[in-house]
Image 1: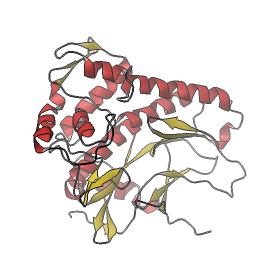
Image 2 (image 1 turned 120 degrees about the horizontal axis):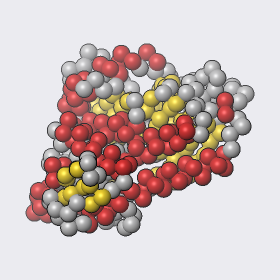
Image 3 (image 1 turned 120 degrees about the vertical axis):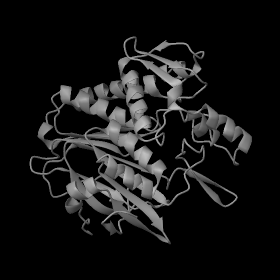
Length: 346
């Protein structure tokens, strides 16, 4: 490892923590979307907010993101692109086009560690809309699907706002669309004058403003355990996104081998290195989501080097013997290390 600081720190599922000592508490809207949960917490400063009206608006925003970007909906715009004839330009809405543009940029920057055309491999390994599998796919089928992957096979025309596939790639935005959904909800809340809020979609978070007049939003960082949730540290955040990615809950085992849901687009295989989880902070959840995916694919050594090269605040947790150790990128250490707190035992 090349980091100057190495410390033991279990990780990650991001949880909203309550502050029982505060007389005024945020109001929270909860539901399900994108195959996971969402929570929208409204800062205590907005005690007069119309929750029913806000909930309707949030659900409308999330449904629109799902309608455009889901691979699980037959009627989604993304699936219309995936099912279109090769070399045929498909007009798409501005939101989907933006996410595809950002995906292309991140794929290029990461050398393909993040690649939104990995969908056929995700399906092959049983982590996509085609459903679970019970055995490892054949090498022949794996190679065939791998040959189909490549972000350069998707042509974006900014002027016409069209998408054209030049090979039979299956575009899968699961590594970035959830983060975009967080940003879209946050933007909606801001337009409604709710400038103190926290949006959490399946652990992808954006925190704006303050939880109460004198307290920032506080996020729990959890150990990467398969079967339990143990909060090890608390990080207070404000006006920033925080996104996690890990392999410790979504996987399958076959003949004693553990297969992660995170697929390396360059090999076609589930990742097999020691990195168990990563959390990334960024100005927006779209970027944080994509970078967390890329770093998770790269692994502890290359992922840390990538984060340092691109000035990304990242916390990487890797397996060491029977336990875990952690690495901070230089930017994470600079901006967030001193703010980490150990939760009090009640």
